[in-house]
Image (cartoon, rainbow, N blue to C red):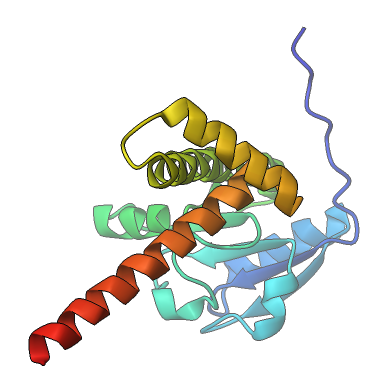
Length: 205
């Protein structure tokens, strides 16, 4: 059975509106205030305190990367793009910042609440997916480290015995198999580095 997402309570949330002085800002501010959010407008860039904001509305018509205190696509909160011009370059720029929702200008007396809800859900889904991808990459990296450690211990002979030795080392060191593998790989790399530096010195001699 599919669970219906709960509508979050947005009262007390803080939203920054990154837009030049314009009736659009006033229209958004009125709607945010009616919903119960604290609205703060700014231009031409976001202040440092915006990093703690719950939402950011930003203008795509005159926007540029340096306005944001983060790299494109790495906003720590949901973003709502304010779109006036549908020029491909402007839309592409908005997409590069991974806007979670959009509002078409001119903004009227409605639309902000639904944009907030869509942006929040889209942002949370994207963050959850990024976490899963990061976890999968970590697991892949750990498996590769274990393979390297087993190869170092077996030296091309019995991999099963080498893996058993790795588990035994992990137990004796009282750490996980993954941490033991990282330690073995690090020690192996140190030995290789020492051997290579020794070879260099012998050649120079």
